[in-house]
Length: 124
View 1 (cartoon, rainbow, N blue to C red):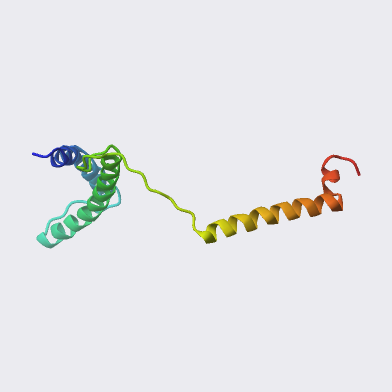
View 2 (cartoon, helix red, strand yellow):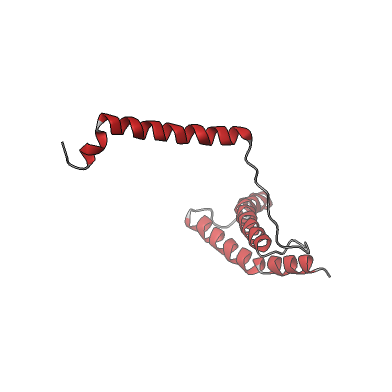
């Protein structure tokens, strides 16, 4: 069995006690709110829906966190676990950088000529 599948099964198996605990919490919350016990078959089916939706939502959140953790640990099945992405800067990026630097320099020069740095030094 591939390690990717084996680790996934082991991670899924660890969810069973968590699902049981989550079910007990939801059942207690329903009882506190007055949902109580059901007698008819139709009420039992409605109660299953009331339990299934929160259990499914919490299960999806936990599974997503586990998947992210497994992927960050390198359990993706790839042989090469290291990768890098080459980031290139386009001509527009360099133009924007030069424009922003020139704006900062012009504003610093202008404020110096107008005497505003002296205000911060306590000289006026």
